[in-house]
Image (tube, rainbow, N blue to C red; front, side, top):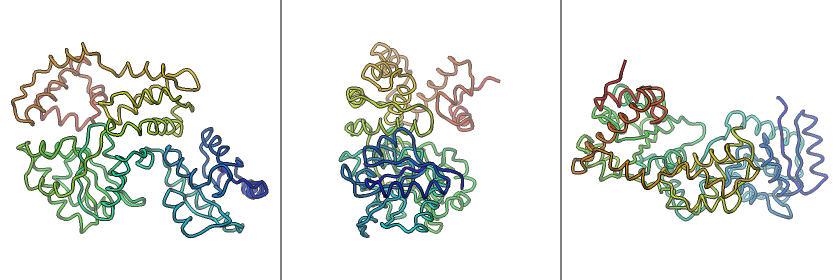
Length: 422
C-alpha cells in the first residue's frame, strides 16, 4: 500500500511514540498530537488519510472531538477510536457518530495493522467530500428534520420532499440512502415513460431520486405511477422532490390526480435557510472547510462579525446562495481571516437594489389571474427569451445560466415554443 498520512492523537507520550514507530515502519507519514487542541490544529492544517483518536484526554474527550469534526464538516476521513477503558456502549456511540472502528488498549500489533489497512482502503473507496446533514447544524428545526428522516428511513415508503429552490432537498434524500447501495438521481425524465422497469433494476435495493416532479409530462407521470407500483418488488425507495406545495401541484390541471394521491401519503417539508438562521455560522464554516478539502482554496477562518453578518443576511437563494457567497469570499479575500468587510463586499454583489428590483418586477409580462401552470410557462418563456437576447442565443451560456443540462434545456425551449437560431 502506498504511503498515507496518519494523525495519531493520544495524551500518553509512550503510546504516541510506539504507534508512530510501528506505522512509520509500514511506510506511512505520521503526525502526532498530544491533546484535542493539537489535533484540531493539525486537522485544519491538512486533512489526514485517517486518524487514530484516543477517547480519554485531559482537555476534551475523543467522542466530543469526533462530534465536533462531524458538525463542522471535517469528518471526511476514517477515524479509529482507541481506549483502555472501552465498553460496548462507547464503541456503539463512536460508530454512530461516524467513527470507522474501535480499538481497545493494549492494542495487539496485528489488530492495529489490520484495522489501519481496512480504514485506509475504506477512505479510497468512499471519499467524503460533499455536504451532508451531519454538518447541517444543531437547531431545533434541523434536529426535528433529522428525527423525521430517521423515522422514515426505517420504512421503504415513497416520499415527497417540498422545499425552496436551492434548498437542502437533495441532502435530505441522500440521508435516506444506505452506503453501498445504488443511488440514481434523475433530472432527465424520458426513461420514466420509456423504461420504468429498467430504472428500477438500476436502483435495485437503493434510492431513486426525482429532482422536480412537476416537470413530468403526462406520459412520464404514468410511467412514474407504474414504477411506484413495482418499487417494493425491487426494494427501491422512490424520493420525489418539488419546489411547489401540494395545493400548487393540485392546481396544475396537467398533473395526474391519481399520482398526486399516491405522493400525498408521505410528504415532508424541508425548512428554508431563513427558518434556522442560528445554523448559518456552522454551515458557512463547513462549506469553507469543504472548499479546503477539495483543494479549491487555502484555509481561512471567519471572524465572529463576519459569521454574524452571514447569519443576519436574507437568503432568497437558500443553501445554494450561501454556498455561492462562501466560495466567493474564500476565493477573493486577501487576508488569512475573513472579516466583516469581506462578507459585506461580497453580499453587495448578490443583492438586487430596490430600484432594479422594481424595474424587474414591472418588466414581467405576466397575468396573475391565469392558472398557475400558464403563469409559470409565461415566466419561463420571458426568462429564456431575456437571456437569449443578452447572450446572442449561445446555448452553452444559456445552459450555464439556467443550471439546466443541454438536452433538458432544448426540450424546455421546444415545450415553451421558443425557436432556436441555427
